[in-house]
Image 1 (spheres, rainbow, N blue to C red):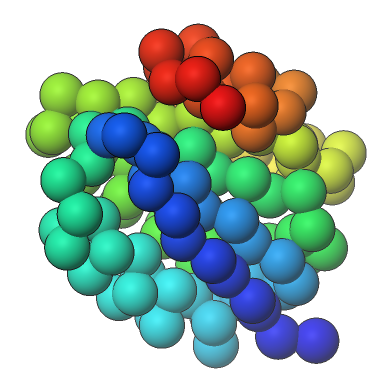
Image 2: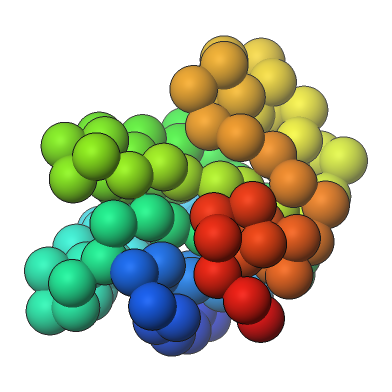
Amino acid sequence: MGLNYTFSVKEDVLIVRLAGEIDHHESENLRDVWKETMYANSVKHVILNMESVSFMDSSGLGVVLGRYKEVLQLGGEMVVCSVSPSIKRLFEMSGLFKIVRLEESEEYALETLGVAS
């Protein structure tokens, strides 16, 4: 199926919308584009919308964790929203939810970061 992604910026928040499968084939390109987008825009926080992600492996977790560390260095926060039960289970097992906040929707995640949608 592959991976599709879009990036948009609202104030100091980068919204990353992912759709499809995040495996080792897709992770490298996603990492590079995500990193470039973060530094091309003056963002502090990241919202990761995974509503349409059907599969994710450890390489995808690595990409998310790497961007989380960059957001932390910027003094920001990463919020994950709209995850499927299988992706939620993967994040729980990996311990990612101990450092990244989970919200129900992108709109609510924006509100919690002080950005009106």
